[in-house]
Image 1 (tube, helix red, strand yellow):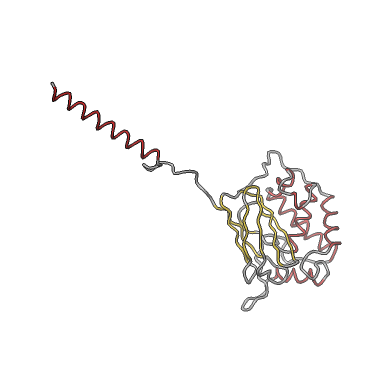
Image 2: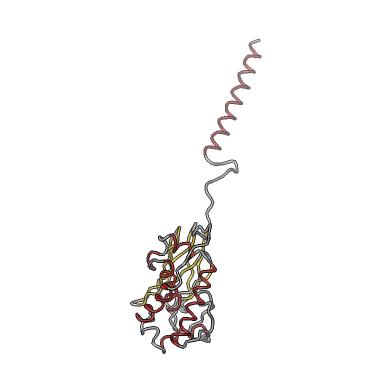
Length: 238
């Protein structure tokens, strides 16, 4: 009788030990379970240029969720990666007294040039806000997330330059077109020559920033076409 009781007691202690061990593994996150929330990386890449590469420019990206920055290389190329980032995003490239802006609905390509700076002014005016408040303004945020609106904006800015200043761009998709500034061993692309033409026509000042009168005129164009967000627009993109 005594032997049976001891055997039963030993078995009970074994099960208690196993249960305690399992509980300890679970508490430590072991056993192949969920080790925590997963993370994703949103990357935005492009070229910062004014006709020449903005090498060394600091490119800062501020998004609906997340921020990041990178330094442009010798050809103006940059890549900014943001952990758990969520678009849309507003970009700023700064080198000395040259400050240019751009936009991105989410991950992908976004150049930063005098043309994209004019686009930002045009879009902000359409949304009824300022470039600095594009992300905090509900209408502005929805516009930046609207791929059709961004494409239309580029087309409208290109048409504005042609009609007002007689400049015909090689591509109306200047936000994402491949740009190759004149650097040793590289042939200057047509899209970069467009930027040289803007300077030659006085549309862009000597520091690569759009002239004040041109900015004023493009904002006037934007006021003629106020943006109305599509029904159900969330203003977010990845």
